[in-house]
Length: 343
Image (cartoon, rainbow, N blue to C red; front, side):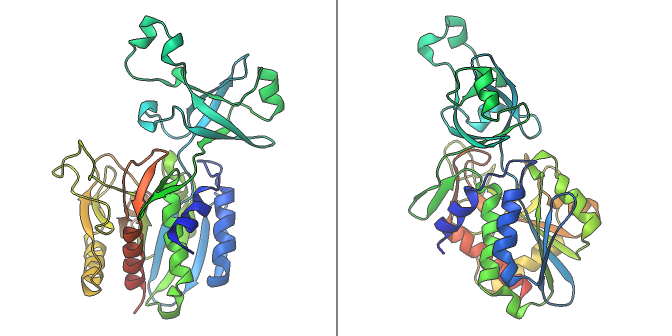
C-alpha cells in the first residue's frame, strides 16, 4: 500500500481527543496478524506486544487529532464551539471555510466552519483585530435549535476538520497527520516484517488524549514499564517563508528529527546518540533540533524514570487542516526505527 493510501485510510478515521476508539479499532484489526498480543487499558490506550526478547523497547504514538467541541446551539441551529484541547488561539487553527464533521449522538453530521463575511459586518467588526471563539461557528444546515438537537447535536459533541487528504508530488497534506502518520509508520514496520529479526522485546503503544495534556501516556506508566521509549510525533519544519533557519534549522526531505529538548523535558542523550549511530551505519539522514513551543508524550516517560527520545518526521503547518509531510522522510523514519530494533 502506498504512503498516500495508508495515510488516507488513517486520517479519514474520526478520532478527536476523548473519542479515539475508532482509531484504536483500526490499529487492533490491522496489527493483530503481526503481533503476539494486543490489549486495551481502562484508560483507552492500546498496547501491542510484537515479539523478541531482551530489553523492553516501546515505540509509541497518540491516536487523537486536533478538534473542537460544541459549547452551545443557538435558536437558529448554529453550533458554537470551543477548543477540545487546552486553551489556544483559534486564529492559529485556521478554522474558517473548512469542512467540518460533527460527531453527534446518532452519528456523523457534515458541516462548515464559518464566520460572517465582510459585506454584512459593521465597520467596527471589520476593523476588529484577531479572532475569538465567539466569532465563528459550525453551520450544519439546520434551521433551528430543535432540528440540530433532533439530528443528535449536543453540548459536548466533538467537531473535527473534514477536508480530503491531498498530495503534490512526494508531499502529502491534510488534517490529522498529527499523529496518524506515526501510526502509519508503525503499521509499515509490522507489515515489512520487523518482528523477524528483533534485538529486543518490542512493544507498540497508542495513547489517548495527548493533545489534552498527555493523559494516556501518564496512565501508560502504570500498565507497561519499558526500558527505553521512543515517542513518535510530528516534527517542526522551518523551511517556509518567514521562518529563519537560525530559529528552526529543519526541512522536509532531510530525514527524521531527533529532538534534544522541547518545552517540557530534555530527552535521553544516550538513546539519541544510539539512534545517530544506527543512522550513520545505514546511511539514513537525520536532523537535530530543539522545540521551544512543543510537547509530547515522551515527557511523561521521562517524568516516570524511563529513558525516552522524541523522533519526528518533519512536518509543515502543524496543528492545521493542511499539515504537510514528505514521503522520503516517512521512508527514512521507518528505516531508522527498523535499524534500531533489529540486527
